[in-house]
Image (cartoon, rainbow, N blue to C red; front, side, top):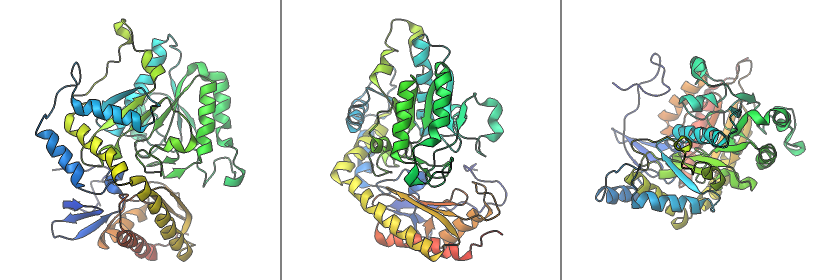
Length: 434
């Protein structure tokens, strides 16, 4: 009945039926528990079914189910907009509501393009993207993503972009070591902007970590140089914080680590703690001003039926407050140390199988050596790895040869030990292709 996402229709195991969840655990219909090692695609940052988030949804549904946001507003949308702008230290001026990360990214692209059109700069049509990036599955999001199995079949639908190598400090595209890094990976991009900036709208990037593109990390100074370059050439810096936002990197928002101010950011996933779907795009004042006009052609004609719906906003408000009430960033800081310890121990035990370990905030990554086989999302071992982990009561979903652990921030040491125990058991069966 259900056409499940990212699931081959032949050769896949049947889906596991989950009936309940609490904290870092999910439970199947037999009562067996599973540690959610990936926060159900990175959303359940406070754990499953946090009582304050569930109660916020219930309370709001008792008052107002929905009202369209075109020509109307409601208290949760107003309060959440204020809280989000405050959460971002008032670096932004407006909040645009939507439903999911891909849509928040699409909105950012559309606003950026129309911003320059409204200013009369109609030659600016090109977006710069990075080769290993992933920003979602809608047409615009796929267009600014790197060439991959996710978008290859849809190439005829995608708009043209300019592609540059992804900054990845563990596997530098220009052959530098971290200690000698001078952000040389951006030299080619800067050279391009020096002669083509009048055609470029913006640069799209996931700050600090390219998530689904392979969990590629880059240093904050890469982001600093990118901001300096884009500012010099009059190009927008557009950050996709759908994955990295709300504490995942150890900062409220990843860009804060670099001390830069982007022009817009897209947020989703952790926004509601996984309870309800909601996304936002935060926009700086100078961009918004170009849409304030009595000319109807300067209006941003974009909206969705469930934009800023009340219960989603109410849950997001409750989620933001948990960062203060339960000191969530402190949880992330402690989790970072535990993830680092777990991965270092595994690499010491399997040095011939794990070629790289990297940890930042609540993201812990171990990259398997694939030997003669090319690394990538389509990797025969990843299915076997998932199966072994499930048998151990652990939910993990490798990106090909990249094993990542992105648990709820509140995960216990016992549950984390179970995750690394399951990874160890799986690694015992792994043979590096020769």
